[in-house]
Amino acid sequence: MDIQQPFLLFLCVLHLTLMGVLSKHVDHRNLFTQRVCCKRQSHFVYIGQDILGSHISVDVGMCRSHCGAPTTPSYEAGKQQYSKYSSMLDFLKSKKTRPRGPAASQSAGPLNHLPSCGVTQVCEPTGMRVDRLLLFEGPREVAVIEDCHCEIKLAQCIRVPGLRTYFSETPYEIVIDVGGCSQSRGSPDGFSCVPTKFESALVETPNEVDLIQTVAACELKESCYRVRYVEYYYETVHHAEGVKEEKLKEIDVGRCLGSCTTGNRCLLRSPSDPEICHLWSERQSSSCVPQGYESHSFVNQYGQIRTILSITSCHCRN
Image 1 (cartoon, rainbow, N blue to C red):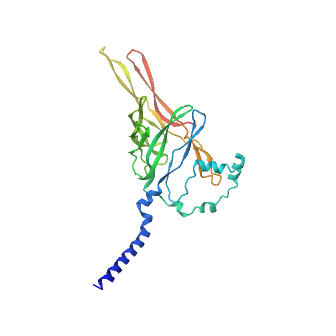
Image 2: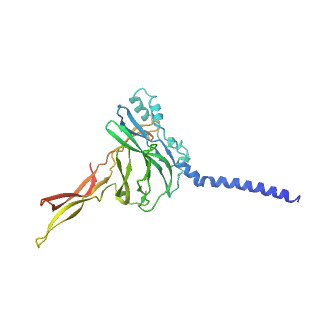
């Protein structure tokens, strides 16, 4: 009995020591530790003016995809830095006198390059809500990121779930899977996984029933691309036997979707680091427009010849 007690004590000490050593080598690979690095950070976007004429900026959020990186300064922090200067001229001069070179980039430390989700994952929103704002030009909807997590980066271009909360904190609050497209790996240059087929969901509101567009299917397309859009018309067909037949004519008139790169959207940059933007403008409206057309002629139910144009291709307008 006297021999067993010291031996058991020795085993306990040895076990605790080994657990401590192993934890030092395992913690940095722990999945929970990696997921903590993928988190929501502030990202202010200028929306416009409200009905009182005040400028409105909304924190729509962004998912930070690297561990150890410095937190993106908030909109208030940007205004504080800008307030140090007496004029915009002094503010611009300070940006030119900022030291550049390898020394400035190395001061951030080696932790800035640690991936948060690994090579096969991406930091994406896990929940979003849609806020409705009353602006001077009318009501606007703004999608706001609520939280982020690590999501597996798929090799295929497929439709993925995308949950959005509408009418948050009201009796009409509802969560709808509006869907989205996966960020596929190994896509050809210039191609992206984009929505090509849509469906609709009905949402009840105090005043009316809203129609929410949802993504039904995705394909690999260029940034500016054509999607199928079907319209139906009554067509009258005269057969050789003198029989007149009225039937539905289906025409794929097409639609242009996607967007084209249009300049820089940053409105206020950090005076200490121009790579940091404190305030962004809204994403520019799509300049993806029809390029090629095709005509479809038929006789309608009134005996008149009608011609419908359909889009055959799209391109980015200069």
